[in-house]
Image (cartoon, rainbow, N blue to C red; front, top):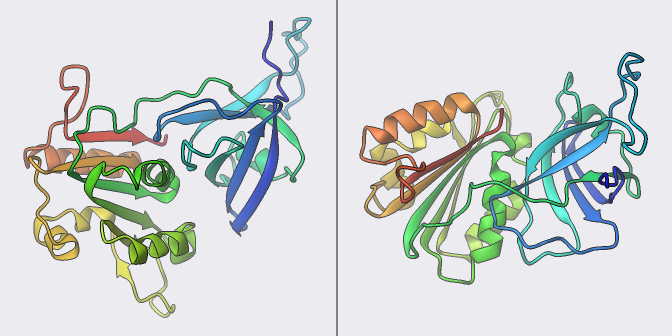
Length: 269
């Protein structure tokens, strides 16, 4: 039996600016299934391109869907809807159509939630260093909100890198967490913010904050593999550079041979 291509509904949309938004999507007739913070769900909409007459749709299959996987930004305790942090890609296959949706419109959300970018295997009591670029912050929000009251870490350090300050879509919320929770450290940084803007925060790539002296100054503890686990999400170039640097400093990439590795990453494209 084919999966219903309109099995979900957009229940809320919060625009951060014209190309950045939060989408909250609910399944029709069922709660969100249990999932691990850091996992993703796949959204889909009918392909706007005219159907290929040489490849007719089989009876009962429904329209062809354009699908993309998005990290879940909401906590596992939120069972009415899933939240996604999405940037509009001008020539993207799905996001221009997502931007046409209004609250109450239908779309597809795969009932199966997947992914291995989780805290599985990370011992309690470590310093968790979460490095996100762009919308790569999403899985870290889910992790923090899901586990913040469960003594899962000594510190939760979030490095949030974007081009300009307005792209820091969760900045106000993250700054609130940092004020309320001594174990939460929020370090936003921007790379292309105009010099004459009112931004007074950090400038430069997130990589710079992982340099030993810079990290210890900002966080108050050293960035060391015996006490820290590092998670990277977002720009593949950032991930490659940080992985090479931290591997040289004793961090081991988590993989099948090293399930207890201290460096974990999720590429966004």
